[in-house]
View 1 (tube, helix red, strand yellow):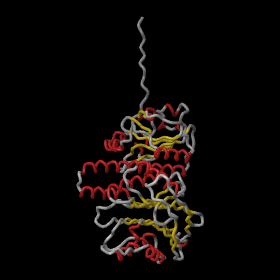
View 2 (spheres, rainbow, N blue to C red):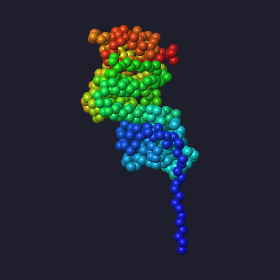
View 3 (cartoon, rainbow, N blue to C red):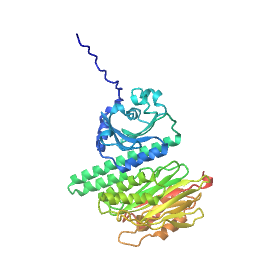
View 4 (cartoon, helix red, strand yellow):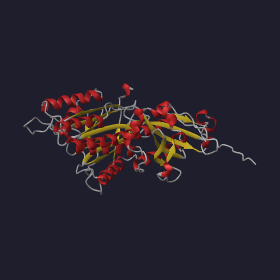
Amino acid sequence: MASTFKPVLAPTVPQLPAQVYDPQRLAAVAATELMDSEPEQGLDDLCELAVATTGARRACVALLDGRHSFWKAAAGGGPLSLETRRFAIHEDLCHLLIGAGAPVMVEDAAHDARLAHLPIAHEGGLGAWAGFPILSDEGLVLGGLCVLDDRPRRWSDTQRQALERLARSVSEEISLRRRLRQAHERIEGLEGSHQAVSQLAQSLQDSLLPPVIARPAWLDAAALYLPASGGENVVGDFFDLFATQEQRWCAVLGDVSGKGLEAAKVTALARYTVRTEATQHLSPATVLTRLNDALCRQRLNTRFLTAACLTFEPHPDGSVRGLISLGGHAPALIRRADGTVQEAGLPGDLLGMFDDLSLHTEIVDLAPGDAVLLYTDGVTEAHRRGDHASWGEPALAALLAGCGGLNADQILDRITAALTAHAGNYRSDDTALLLLRVPAIEEV
C-alpha cells in the first residue's frame, strides 16, 4: 500500500518593511553593541516606569537587526534569561515601528489588521500594544520601547506623552554610551597626538551639551556654555533641562573636576544617569545619590563632580514649586520679582568621592516674575590673565538684582557682558549658566 505524504506548511511570515534591511540602519544597530548583551538596571528601570505610568502588564526595550528582535530590557511578567529575550523579527511587533518611523498604538489586537499574522493576537495572549521608536543620532529606528496588555484598552494622551519621553530617554542613553565607547577607542589609537585629543574633546563637548534646551510653555528658560580659553580644555561643565513625568521637570547643572577626555567620561555618565533617575524620583537628593552610586560603582577615573539638581512643577496660580539639592555645588541664586536676591540650597557632599553621602533637599517657591540661576564656578572665579581678583558671588548677585524687566536670554547676555568686562576675553575655566524664570502675570 502506497504511503500518503502530506507536506507540513510553514506558518505565514509577513513581508517586513523595506526599512528593516536598510544598511545604514543595520550598521547603527550593530554600533550599539547591545544585541544579546546582558541586562542593565538603568534600562530595566525605564521599563518599570513605563509599566507604572501606563498600568500595562509588561514593557520592554527591543532592538532589531535584520533577523532578530532582542529585548535588552524588560519589566513585568517575571525575569527573562538571555535565551528567552531573543525572537525572530517577524514575531515581535516592533518591526512595525521601523516601517512607520513613528509610534504605533493598538487598542484591540484581535481586530487590528497589522497584527493579523501573529498567533498571540488571536489566542488571548495580547489585547493591546503600544510602541515608540528608539532612534539613533541619525534618526534611524533601532527598535522600540513597547508596552502590552492582556486585554483591549484605550491609551490616553497622558500615557502617550509619558511613553514618548521615556523612549527619548532610552534613545539618548544609548547614544551617550556609544559616544563614550567611541571616545575610548579613539583615545587608544591617538598615540599621544595633542591636536587630535583637543579635536575629540571639542567634538564630545558639542555632543554632551544639548544644542537647544527644551522648556515647557509656562517657563522662560535659557542656558549658556563658554569653554575655557585655549580651546583644548573642554568638557568640564554640563547642564540639562528636561521633562520627567507629565508637568514635572528637572534642571541639572554640574562641574566635573579636571578637563578633557577623562572629564568627558564622567560628564556622559552623569548626564544620562540624571535623565534616567529623575524620571523615577521626585527628590533631587535621591537623583544625586543615585548618580553618586553610579560614579562610585563604575569608577571611570579619579574625577569627581559637583552638581545642583532642581525638580519642579507649575501650580494653577502661575507659580512654580520645586525641590533643590546640592552635591558639593554653590547655592542657586533666586531673583524675586521685587529685585531681592537670595540663595537656595543647603550644602552637600561632593559626588563620586564617597559611598556614604550626605545631601539635603530644600523647597524652592517661585512666584510670577521670579527667576532662579544655576551656575558653575567659572562665573564667580572669572579673572583677567595674570590678575587673580575674582568677580565673585556678590557681584553676580548685584547684577542679577538689576535685571528687572529682562527675559531669560537677556539676563544671561547681561551676565556674559559683565564677565567680559571684568576678565576681558580670558576665561580661566569653563563657564555654564542655566536660568529658569517664571513669566509675570502680564506676560502670560
